[in-house]
Length: 122
Image 1 (cartoon, rainbow, N blue to C red):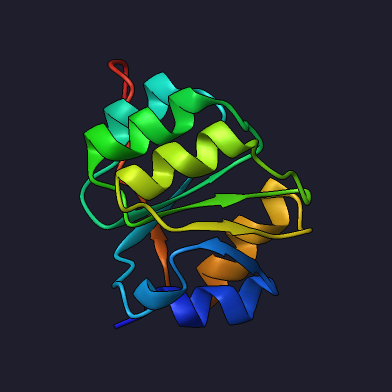
Image 2: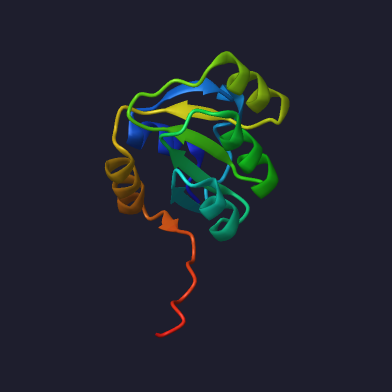
């Protein structure tokens, strides 16, 4: 089982919120900036990695029952986003890695991506 504490270590992440929840299990990860993709492809206990720092990210995480949000490229969310995440019990992390590199580092750990739909012509 991989948990948020191990993710923090691998991504050299700073914990913005949820330091008491680092034992949460991470089943899969999703790197996306389109929240519609997150809603379509994620499942419970998925870790969301994104470069977006708007309130829709927290709303999407809440609706999808995601385990945490990682903001990439050192982006810091505003106070409104942190408060919304706190109200919804969603840990927030920030890493200086790009979305591509952060996802790759997690894949090296054994965290898989979310299943995707097969193209109709395949």
